Image (cartoon, rainbow, N blue to C red; front, side, top):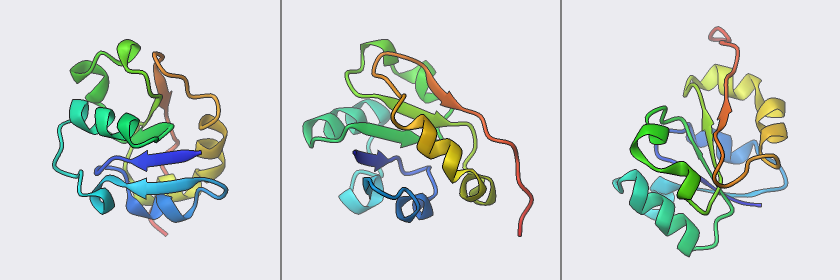
Length: 111
């Protein structure tokens, strides 16, 4: 699956999602785009999923009308995300456009 990581999502996640083609908004030069423009660019460039840690996106965008799935991870705390890769990988194929795709993770302490 072709996945775009929003600028507020730890970039290290890109290397941990095996079997997916993952790019970051920063790599694409899209890290300054507003959410609506970012989602449209992702759609226009063939991305199949956007992963974000922006909790406000569901209030700023009409996600039920967005034709690309958006998976919102409820933290950008890197140790928590790194320790939760299996949960994130499980959530990816079930994320659907037009639905609330939120993932809450149990906080992990720093290593």
